[in-house]
Image (cartoon, rainbow, N blue to C red; front, top):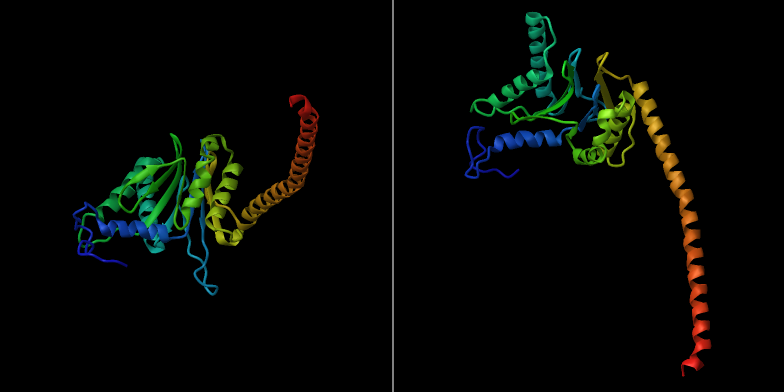
Length: 283
């Protein structure tokens, strides 16, 4: 990787006003496995790709339960994600012990952002190389936040992070206006569709993805592989039906085009006959 004299520690500014160490941490998020989140008025769904690095190893966990009403999905350095997940659990436990009520999602996200920001302002620390999608439900409704290694945080209707996440973003941007009215099952289907977009042709199975849900009357939990596979199978059946319908429609369109061409040829012949008949009169 190209290096310069301004990336030796996180507190050194470049002449262009950039902190390269922070940008490197954000790049680590882009290199991680994809994670997507979708939100309706009543539910939030998180989905991640959890492929193993080797055929001989197991995959790393990418989704963590924080509390009954909050969970996170990560992309980037999994070890950093585990540390931050433990910090979030402690914050929720402490708040529940003191106030005997669940910690609001927005307040937890601000505390997480403050913790990440400190690491961008201390020369003996490094930024966390992980991005977190925080899904939660509180008195104000369902929420989906993205926490960046720079200390910034944003609330989204739907978002994707990690490797090849742009394909998932493009898919969700075409449909996000309807997400508020979606049911739980519709959110799960679209989350799996978005994950499938990031695989770029690779077959999606329940063994390489994790899906978690939180909503009204439904604590944060991860779906079992059997349920995920049933949803994937229903998606594949719909795609097969759509492709078959398109294939059936193609010959009909070809027939219509050929009939239109024949009619055009006949019309042109009739025009020629008329013109040949009218020629002597014109002379």
